[in-house]
Length: 353
Image (cartoon, rainbow, N blue to C red; front, side, top):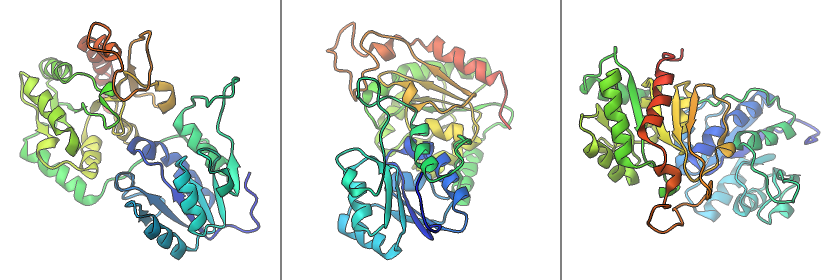
């Protein structure tokens, strides 16, 4: 446990760089806030995680890392931080904390940055000495535990800005959404790579079946780079979606607001999957090349859909196998009926309160 002579007055917390990891980091942020109630806490985050964590109930202070190393050092020095908590594992984050003047620097001793830290945690390893796969949520909570925080509460949580909530309401009103029918969000993209992506035409088949069987109102989500995927889903559908967010200028803030208004999400293993859990919305997560254990989130309204294949989980961004009968089998062996079964089971439980 970190020994301090007095409570640090100014703390900077470096947020993990991936959107999903930023959401899985929220129990750690909550625990740190509860432990250091009188301290000023500032978040240091890249633009996407910063957008996900704006607003938040733990701090109104945010330094957005836009990539300029010297500018970041200057911002950090102005903060006169007494403690830096490093969510990312990178050497860069350790060097920024050191050059930024933080007196105490807590993080995992990885990436050759051990000498930059004053308080080091050894990463989990298996019996062979290699890095062990543990849930990221628990991995981050170990940082808070080292600070003497209570880490029993593993709930993820997010908040929605008033402007984003109003825009979501407006879009739903313009689309004439029916409050008596479930809203189901499809999230067919994945910034990680194509290995995580369930085929667009199969998303479309699931959507058509939900419209026919449940009267579902389909909202298709898409980041700017994922618009072609969202459009491919819409074009493959025999029915019309309620809204294609790729065609209305989607943002992370708007997506949070839409997820909060929805009854269920169907998604690949990608960051917005965790938005659903953070808002207590049921979620069906389709896994291909990645290991579900790393992103275990202890959420009882989530269903994981996956199949075992000899080559997986490979953790590759693209399937390494050549085109043919074995290519991308981790996804292609999952029939739409399997996704539908998980979806209908959750819809049958009703909307969470």
